[in-house]
Structures are given as structure tokens and as C-alpha cells.
Image 1 (cartoon, rainbow, N blue to C red):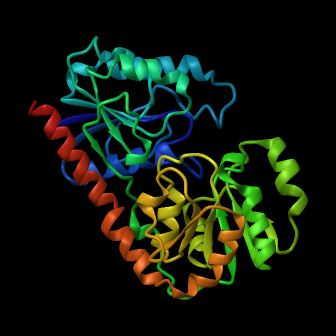
Image 2 (cartoon, one colour):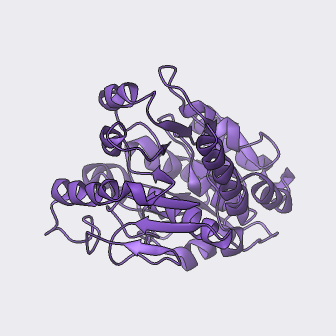
Length: 335
């Protein structure tokens, strides 16, 4: 089986720090190679992979502002499509734009929908509903207007996360600094609970950071920026709990699974895929507001950190994700 894997070019594959889509593409790609599948990864030229690499765009446009995203997206996507007949299947992880080629090529395409950025993109997904195969990353993120071949939950390389069976003495917020992700709410919880808070993530909304986050920073509430894999493991495994007070229907939530892989329980607002990932009272808590989130901190000691890790190994491992994608490929090819 020859697979063409299409990754975004906003960040490197795998990313140096932020880049959730690129991180998942890397995990799928490396897992497929371990299964002796012939994979060609279409990503930025500086990407790292054991597969064959095709990098039309030399570096990520989020890191090199001389790169025009539209121009290089066009060149990047057209490159894989112009060589489509060399592959048995194309795995699209680049949102809706590659769909516009799906009726022009004979090679079947599977599209992992990593989330709908806006209702405005739905006409494209609807138009190509019958000429490609959609995979959802959670049942909560499915559109009633589309057909899906399967839901495949994201998986992580569990070996990159260290289990710590002892509760830490601080809370952690790990994600984009943006109103959707609830950075300000996490700060309020930490203040109410009189606990330290470590904030890690890319500043996606600068005004929000300046007005809702920066004024609260002190010795107890610290912002450490966007961290790479090694520091991520340290920050997550030594925390008391991960706070995830989201205000949007999050399609999945990698940081939630990564924290649990370290044994750290997660407290999240009841939005999107959270009830599919968090088993209330077993590996964290599902709550509705700041007050409930603060209250649930008192019950963290009842949660087994070892069980948190075991949940991830069983349900959200890289191996399980790769196995399910291989099954999807075979199902499509056998049609």
C-alpha cells in the first residue's frame, strides 16, 4: 500500500512547539512506517520523518513571514495532486481546500476533519461529500450534513509522557491564549483555590492576553510561553490538575490526553468532545462553571493517577490510532 500523507504547512511536521494538526500527522506517518507501509509525507521542507519527504515549501509560514500562505498552500497541495496516480490512497489533513481536487483524480482520498473553523467552509465539505471519505476525530464534532466512514480518536506516543503518581502542588493551563480556551477562567479558579498556576501556550489573541492574562501574572500565576516536548512532559506530570475551561465545542483536546498520560487529572467544562475523553470521577471531572471547577479540586485526591495513564494507553495511544487508520484505508480500497 502506498500512502500520500498531506500535512499543513503552518508549522513543521512534527512541530517544534505548537501545531496540533502537524503533530497528529507526524504520529500517524511514523506509525504507518513502523507497520511497513510505504508513506510519502507532503509537509514543510524542514520536517522530520522516517517516511519519504516532499517539501515544496521550505519552512512553515507561521515561522517565516516572508512566505505567503495562500501561494504556498496552492503549490503544496497541487504537488500531491499532480502525483496522485503514484499512490493507492491520499490522506488529507489539510482541511477543505484539497477536496476541490477529489473529483479530478482517480486516487481515493480520506479526509480527517480536525475541526470546522467556521460554518462558512461547509459548502465545500457538502459538495464533495460523495467523492471523498470523511473521518471525524470525535463523535461530538460530526456534522449532520456529512457522511463519515469512522470516528478515529487522536492518539499520542505515550512513551513521551512520564507517569507521576504523586500529586503536584500547582495547577496547569496548557493551550492557546484565547477567549475560547478560557485562560482568564483558569486564573480565577487558581485565585479562588489559592493555588499556583502555570500557563503554557501560544498567544493567539494579543489583546486578550494584555487585558485578561498579563495583569494577573505574579509569583503564583506564571506564563512560561510555548513549550516543546521535554518541558511539556515536566510541566504536565508535576501538576496537581489540568484546568480546561473551554468556551467552544472543542473537537478533541490533545493537552487533555497528554496530561492524563502523565497521571494528571483534568477538570474541563462540559463542551464538545470532553465527555468522550474524560470519565467523570475516574480521570477527571466535567463541570459547568468556575465555581464547580474550583469545588472539584477538593476531590482530585480521590482520582488514581495511575488509572489516568491506563485510560490513555488503552484508548488514546498512537498504536491504536494507526491501526484504525489502516482499517479505514483498507475499507476504502476494498470498495
